[in-house]
Image (cartoon, rainbow, N blue to C red; front, side, top):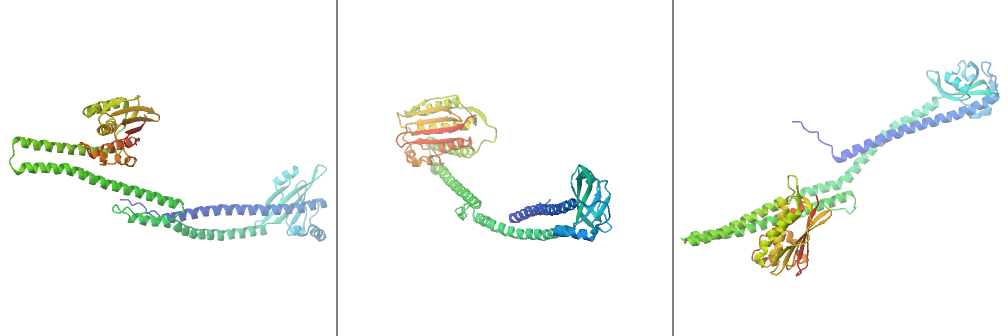
Length: 470
């Protein structure tokens, strides 16, 4: 069995990522700053070389000869001042042969490259870095001197790069010390910030661990900062509230189901016990069996309703089919008309339209029939129940309107809960288990639709199904 490597804690990963990003940024910034400093120093050297070369060009020294005399160099130093420090120059004839040069060069000559000669022929100055020896880099300017359109000679001015390189080397050493130090300090600060920032998450985790199914009333304390962590805490609290409500509904559902099952079972047991206490006539046994059969049928109906309620809370596993609601509604109308025959209630069909939805035809038929049966059951004699079907894009709308006693606003949502029966229901001879409307809404929700109620106490009710069109 291959073990998966253990992942680092979030705060450690945040610190590592933060430090890595900062290290990359510092390296890039250091490289850019080093490059800019190098370029700036070279540009300053080039400007200084140009100033010296212009003075030497205007002095019109002849290229022939070997070295300048001490007096001439002193004159140049007096004229140029500090600009002449560390610099040396050389005059080159047009053909490229070295000629007169400053005494600082001694027996050395400045190189004349092919590129510098080509540029001089076009009247262009050339800046380049050359070496008088392997350990002596020099920044060199080669300037052409043109008289009457003819290249007369070249003026070359150079300066050693030791000081510039030393400056760059010291700057690089400073960066090599400061960058790791900055990264180390940032890593420590990042770890501290990550720990402080994630401390509320740890508190949430400990609070969540203390919450169990037996006690879902605890909530995560919010800091009131309205930041992402407060938003997370609010989301978790909302989830805990929904879980608490779901567990409470489950407990109520189980208690109501047990109560509904207990009543017919108790009646069934009592009837059988009475029949067994003494000898009975065949007719008395038949009466007991008929009563027991009614209780068993009630138990079967209740069990089927409970099973349907649990199945209807989720969408079917298989693919949905196209369901034409108009013939489905006509089938419900036929069953409702037969149910209303002995009650003096008129069931009629209102506006209809050909509408197709996606779903389970049997479940939708059961949902609409439950609502229509409920309307017929609680509509007094002489009243009416009307069914209608319209297309209201993007929904199909089924309405069930009755002239019953109506439902108060405070009970409008309660009637869709399992086993809820209002006072008017207890006054009826056949009250059922209180699962019909709960099953109807559950089926509609599984089809991504809604089932709503509009009612005024004493003025009838209207149930509205809204289902997405195919």
